[in-house]
Length: 97
Ligand SMILES: N[C@@H](CCC(=O)N[C@@H](CS)C(=O)NCC(=O)O)C(=O)O
Image 1 (spheres, helix red, strand yellow):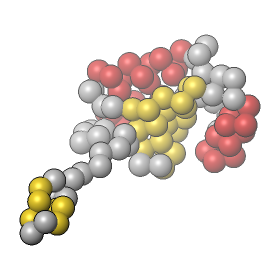
Image 2 (cartoon, helix red, strand yellow):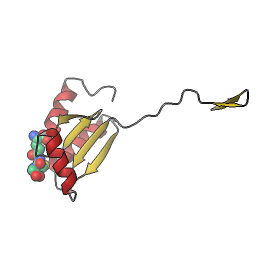
Image 3 (cartoon, helix red, strand yellow):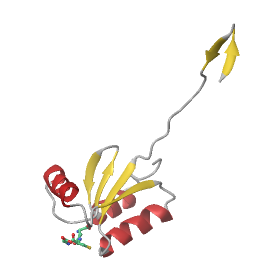
Image 4 (tube, helix red, strand yellow):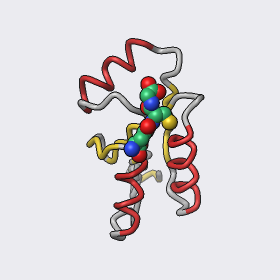
């Protein structure tokens, strides 16, 4: 930010948001594996723990059509669980996240 003719000018401001969201429960081994994979690749993610949130769990099932956790979203698009994440990694599709 700088001043130009007494006007405040905002320059090159980029709002970065986390592109990966992972819905988890606290008793879930596949959730841990998915988080470990993301961490090992240096991919930032937001974790939403739905262990005690029935409403969010219901929303998750409705949105993804799947009853298991983890459920992972990239850019708000559901991509599935750990297996799908792992497959994307093998195909090099996690690069740049
Ligand atoms: N193939 C799935 C397996 C996921 C899975 O089996 N998750 C277990 C927890 S680790 C689950 O959701 N079980 C049913 C439940 O907890 O309600 C994946 O890769 O994510």
